[in-house]
Amino acid sequence: MRRFKNVLILLLIAGFGTSALAQINVPRPSPLGTVKQTVGLTDISVTYSRPSMKGRKIFGSLVPYGEMWRTGANMSTKISFSDAVKIDGKDVPAGEYALYTIPGKDKWTIILHKNTSYAGTGGKDYKASEDLMRFDVKPAVYPVAVETFTINVSDVTDESCMIELLWEQTQVRFQVNTPVDAKVMAEIEEKMKGVTGSTYYQAARYYLEHDKDLNLALEWIDKAIADSEKFWIVRQKALILAKMGRYPEAIKAAERSKALAIEASNNDYVRMNDESIAEWSKK
Image (spheres, rainbow, N blue to C red):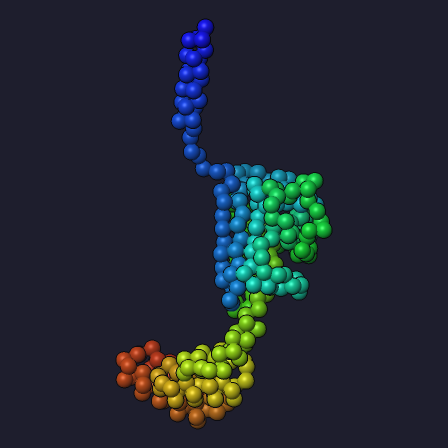
């Protein structure tokens, strides 16, 4: 009898081993996706599971109107920000949040929730008191059918982007604003205390491109040129002078930048300066 039990145990072990070996690795029906984008100086990341239509009606059916949705499949969708940002005019501290939505035919509610541990929407464990924020957006009709649920970070500038949700023929977007200007200005102020020519050049270029104090930008670019007269640095001086409306001086600086570019065999800067000289000569 004891021998029979031992044989039975061995057979069971062998059976479980065969069962484990027989398991097949197949694709997930809603594969995990991650979107990462730097916006200005802020890193934004979205991690979510991506279900597909597979011939089904989605909004108002598979995803009911008026009910909270995990904004994907499986675990709740996560969105993170490396710096504090603004969404819908409200402050959002740096960190990771669950991104929930309440779809509707004419209105979607976007929810950032501080508890990221739930599978799905959290059911009875969900506490509205843990919401960071809720706000409403209007959905739009997308011109083509999107088979697989997609989250994009689009319309990226130095200071903002759009978070875009696409599925079926529905498009939902909301804007995120990043604090790039405040961060750069603070860094410029700090580094101006003891700087190199390269830092003067970077600060002057930022002031030019973001409509800051052009007199200060000109002062800095002159210090950069005094440290190292390079064709790309002199080119920035020409652009600053032109933006100030001081075209004769801008042309003179562009001619100097062109001469330096010829010496360096940089045809791109020769061409850019020629085009600017021709344009500014008409002013």
